[in-house]
Length: 302
Image 1 (tube, rainbow, N blue to C red):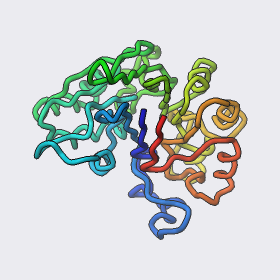
Image 2: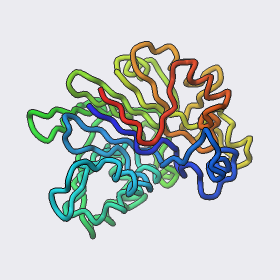
Image 3: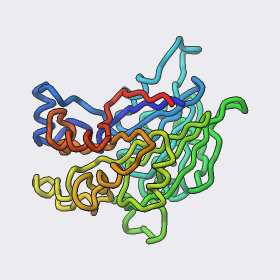
Image 4: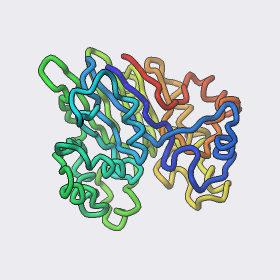
């Protein structure tokens, strides 16, 4: 199995167009130790088969260029066989519109909750129907499916529920027990990778899934719960936005540091998070805990 990080940053990327936080200013000044980052997305494949894109960010055009290898077989071609969606957030789905020039319907995988949101709240699916069209494949939490293009190439994905909030545009329709966000566990050739870019809490079930994985790519949005409030750029804390902060007594670092088996890599990192600075104290704390900070273009082979 091969995994490529296409975008490490949370919504808005780094730098964010309207932000003048220390990280954004450092990137614009080309300072050492911090670099431009695309918005959250990864790609997964097995046995050198076509890639599966996980979440379609607004940066999808340049991200897909990272997946091209070999000579094109025709004048129109795509490096991906399908798109899997962890949720219906704008940052994870807007890129679908940029793929409308596809010569065949886009194969999109997601939960029924995501399908409803992208039909009734943010009507991407009905919009795409007038262009390339969409072939929707249902993902039900807890039920693995095979993404392999033939019997000899097995790439299994299992969606699992995560505690997180619905997108803002669907909150007036939200039902308390609906699953709005899922993570994905991929399996191929005896190797396991788990992707969870949105975590509101860590329970024993999720931690056991992480421990049984060979590599985990996990939510690193904010360093502290009141990070955005302290900077004066938001009135909601990280937990209120559906993201468990890294630091603090109940932060994710203390839980992730206890995991012994998997390689641990942070993704979906907000532009304000000080761990993006290579020489920051916060970065040192993360690395001392045996956790890596992801980077665009990083390839993981399992």
